[in-house]
Length: 153
Image (tube, rainbow, N blue to C red; front, top):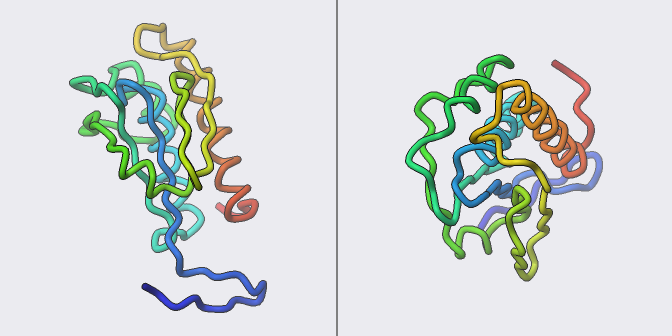
């Protein structure tokens, strides 16, 4: 266990926050959310404070090609990402869990939010871009809410 360090705002800064993004197949929306969350964590210098998890209840064999393409358009590399299963224990350890419009998940003491988003798997790239942009907006909002608005590049 770590000892909290006081900052000028009297907030503790050394506790790890676990953010989890999940959907059924872990091949589209949750992979996009994870990529944006990793970017936000790095841009904000929160590497020591934020752990990002992703998974699905019935993982696909691979991330949707159209999702890889849509993320590449905004400079995020999803090549090599593999859908994985998420355990109940991993979800219960989380501070925040976003599901992607496919869950009735209820966890005690875990902040959950169901993002009602279309599955990008079989959609044309134009539709996937819209889903991608909405996922990005929501991920940034989660970081703003939990860690304050980002004011730098």
